[in-house]
Image 1 (cartoon, rainbow, N blue to C red):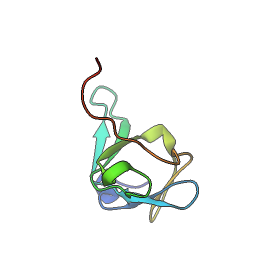
Image 2 (image 1 turned 45 degrees about the horizontal axis):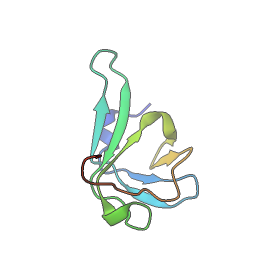
Image 3 (image 1 turned 180 degrees about the vertical axis):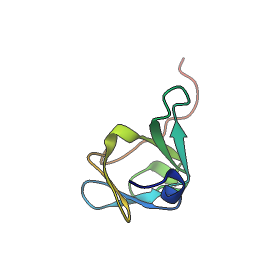
Image 4 (image 1 turned 90 degrees about the vertical axis):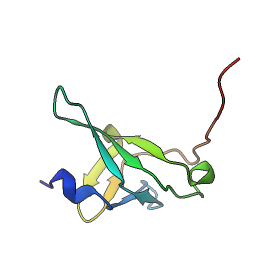
Length: 85
C-alpha cells in the first residue's frame, strides 16, 4: 500500500502508455475517506486541449506503483468554455 502523500508528483499513464501528466493533488471524499479523484494541473497537450488542468476519476486507476497506470482514458479531451445557452 502507498501513502497518499507519496502519490504527489507521480507520473500518470494511459492504458496505451501515453504520459498524461503528474499528480498535483488528490481529491478525497471526506465522509468515507476514500480517494475520489486525481488532479493533474499540467496535462499532456497531445491528449488534453491546451494542456489544461483535469481531474481523473480514481475508479479509472488500474495500478499504483512507481507510476499510476489507468485502465482507460479518452483518446482526446476537449475543453469547452463558456456557459450553455
